[in-house]
Length: 182
Image 1 (tube, rainbow, N blue to C red):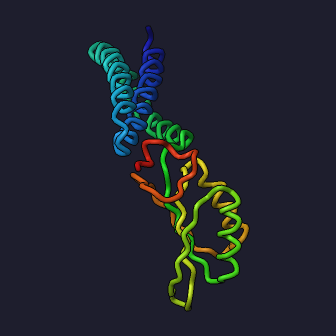
Image 2: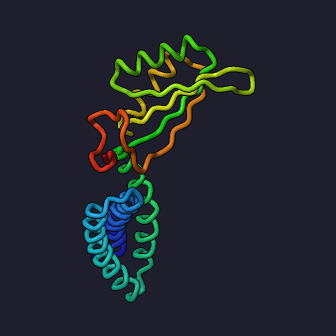
Image 3: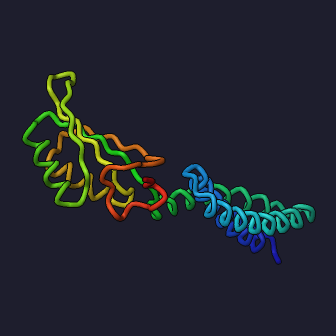
């Protein structure tokens, strides 16, 4: 095989193994042992094959193997992050702060009609009284919920964080079983 062909093979293998590795790390952080283990086996197998190809051609003095390795690693990282976002696994906590009690009430009603549990608390912000809404929802629904909130209160302050575990309360049926423990 010629240098550029080998570089292309190594590049593609690195995209695969780094993408799988990125998703594996995210599953590991979320405590998904079985999925992490399966992805780890796949990642290792691809990596061993890729490194063996790379070392063979580096030892023959071919610099294209190094280029394929390096560019494949960078590209694989971007592809892995994109893949993980597309999968949208997990649960999020959204905090919505609104200044208008009528908007808070409309948000609670609309979100409830869309099968989203909401807890509302009174609070005080820089400019006076506020309503603080807490929502726990599947990550896949995050954009949908954001559209609802921004449509009803374009000036709402919103923060979103991942949830490692949710126990009790109202969590929609679409949430992962492992994320909800009773």
